[in-house]
Amino acid sequence: MRDNEFFRPTALYKEYQILEMVATDPKLTQRSISDRLGISVSMVNGYLDDFEANGLIVREHLSSKTVSYRITHKGSARQKVLNIGFLKSAHQVYDSAKDNIKNFLMQIAEKGFRDILLYGAGEVAEIMLRVIEEWVESPVKVKAIIDDDIEKQGTPLLDVPVIPFPDRTKYPHDGILASSYTNHDIIFNKLISMEYDKTKIIQFF
Image 1: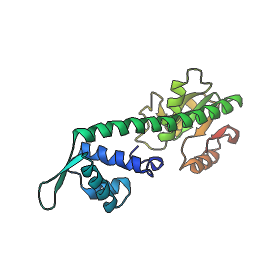
Image 2: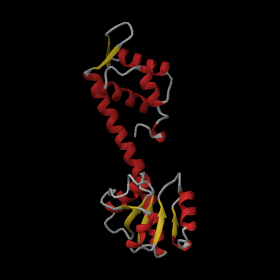
Image 3: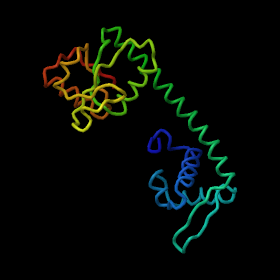
Image 4: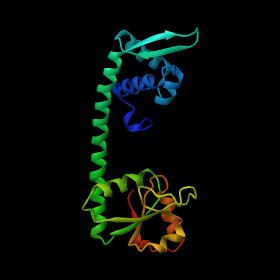
C-alpha cells in the first residue's frame, strides 16, 4: 500500500510510513523517504526532528554526510500502534470495495452472467477473485482470465488460469468482463473488432 494514493494525505499516514522505513532501513536517506512518499525533504526532516524530540528515534552520525536512524523501544511501540490503525483503515476500505463488487456481481448474475471470463490479469482481477473466493454463495464463477501479456499467460492468478484471447473458446462462458480500469476501452474495442458478441461484454467501469 506504500504507493496507494488513497493513503497518502494524512499526517498520521506519513508518520507511520516514515517510522516503518526507518525501522526497515536505518541508513535510508531523507531524499529516498521524500521520493517514496511524494513529500519534500524539509517535511521529512521535520518529522525526523519530531521523532527525535519525542524519543522515537536516535540519530547516529556515521560521517559528515551519512546519518543512521535507530528506532527506540518507544518508537517501536508507536510503530505498532500506528500499524494496527493502518491495518484497520485498510480493512475498512477493502470491506467497502468488497460490498460494491458483490452488488455488481449480483446484478450481472441476474442478467444471466454466471460463468464469466475476466480480461486483464491485474489488480482489479485479483480483488474480484478474492471477493468471489471469500463469498461462499457467490452467484458468479470466473472460468479463466484473458491477458495479452505473454509473460502472464500460463501462470494462474489465484488458481484461475491466465490465457491468450484465442483460448477463450476452451472455457464455456456467458460473457467477458473487462477487469482493467486503464485499458477497459481498449479491451472493449478489441472484443468488438474480433467480432465478439457485444451483448456479452460486461463493463465494470
